[in-house]
Length: 112
Length: 116
Figure (cartoon, rainbow over the protein chains, first blue to last red):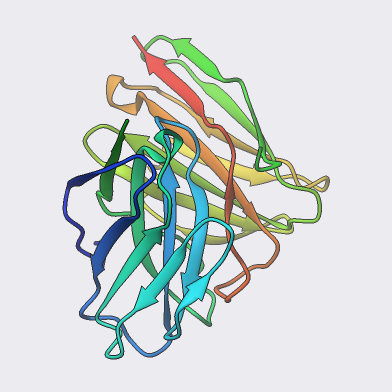
């Protein structure tokens, strides 16, 4: 079972920031938070991951709360091409288990 | 383009048949993963190979098998196909074997299997 909960859907206006929440209240100390997205039946695409500090790359920013029980993925200037299902996944940082366990994700709709 | 290739893109077959899906990982990646995405089950991990050896198994049916060859490409064999096997099958690859901060998985475009 997925160890994260996400709202089923949200929308935002093109050009605005999209803030996608994720709860992972049972996360353990050796688990990272990963975000992937899937655009209309294409293969999932890696976005970003983090342990406890905020992270930023060319695609997005990841804000993890101090207690690590929740996080927010931020797309700073959403475009129509960002319409996708976004998956928040927790995965061990070390060890042999490298599989990804996907939940239902959150469907982001970016409107013109 | 993730660098992971999968063939064929689409496959239509009948119940009871056997099919083979093929995956070529990104250059330099030693791990290959297979995932199944169906409407009712979502994205599910099936199996992982690392440098030719099986490393982890998920919810893979006994009718399904996989292998990774010396050139690191992988094949997923599905036999005695049932209607419920209709799904998208994704292959992913990564550099390393286990968990690790920089062992991200990169997914291919998938093979859409339709069983009639």
